[in-house]
Image: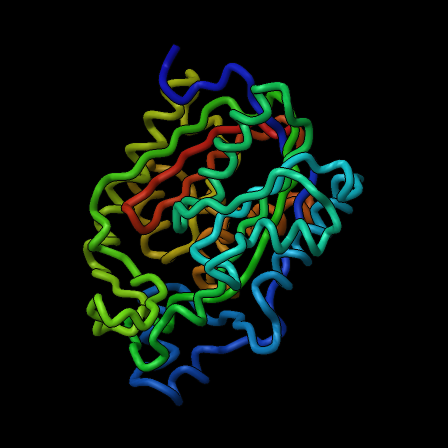
Length: 325
């Protein structure tokens, strides 16, 4: 059996999303740093993003989780596990998943995973293995990130790229996922943010303030090379052609990356939905936010083949092929 092909799969039975209230248009950023709406739009496809003001990340995660539960027709008490793909919760400890569990009033297995922007696809594979064990029935995956506290708002090369947001899904045993594969290529220096630092007198402090550091061109080249390669490998493993795929749901990092990958795969633009213009890069939350929107709009039907691809710091990349149930 080819690597990544699922013996015991899963299906998504409910989705939900939550964004902060405050939207920030490109023109507002242009008043803060040396940039412009035209510069941002042509290079990234982004027109707007949402950032937290009074909201915590736990607030967003809880809101998305409750919507997913309602959509699935389940109560919180029916959830056996909570997995939160996130770069950082509101606290170094406890995990964001534990905070969500408390908000929902449930006592269950709960933990975070950090695969950066590939986090949602990583979360699907982690959930799939737990479901295959037979010990768990319904798992809640909540992808949530608050990039507004990790970026340097005086750095135009990064502050224009990101937004805050959360999206959740409820998964259970099913046959929707046909293939899922995650891996990391060790190139962490292309995109990183230093972790929280204390005031230990025995260790030096970093000079970058913990803000996101990115080698943009190298990240672009990695993504444009890796996405078509991983999609081709995934479809070959399940005996499918690109023409049989209804939608390719790619991590919403940059519209130029999505267009370049689409061109290499020789597929029409309508197969590559985007919402980066409205939300910017919400890291682990981009794919499930997009998925939730498309389901809400009735664009996905039973039997549709979807290919999900996340890529991010690490450099991580995750690929999933599913036939919607």
